[in-house]
Image 1 (tube, rainbow, N blue to C red):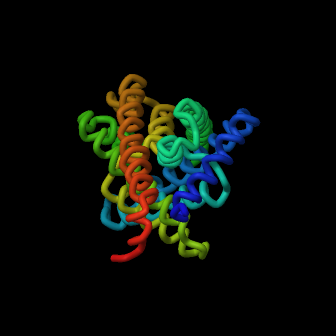
Image 2 (spheres, rainbow, N blue to C red):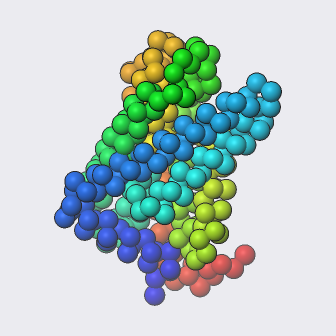
Length: 267
């Protein structure tokens, strides 16, 4: 008998694969909505925290961490498709031979493309919205994005690994909870850790980097298309290691062995 977590993962993957095979256009839109939700949550968290940075930076970091987590809650509750959680789902299912690797990568490509399109569109609309008109060169959005882009490649990669470990802790944990408030609290608290420490999530960066670029890449020499694309690639690879290999592969190895099922939930 499969562990309940593995059963839930396999059921979800079966539905995802069937959906993208039958309705690739609709699936792309579902993925685009995840980009929309996460961009809104990420930009709001940056906007709110910026108001505290001068006088109480610690409160700004706390608010940033908690507000951003609401984006994942919305994605899960609204049934949108997020590439970084799919990295875990698809790796687990492929290792169990429930799906072919080619099917998993096809779905991940569609999901990543949809996330990117949703983030780009949302960021463009936000760049035209009233809160972001007339930002100064030292606005928190620009300094935050410049700081992320200027990280060394190894740091970006490791921060990507750690971020998606925490994202998939949130996803896998909430799958085992029944109470809606408990699920929401678990996801927000799990994501708080990665946001507070400044780890890197590629879909969140799709949104914030795009907004900074649309508002005027001249605000910082770091915010240019080449640096943005390189940072996205490095973080994407790190996210795949953290979500797909560390969380997806390792937990599948744990929970598909009889010995580990027998000691489940024993501290």
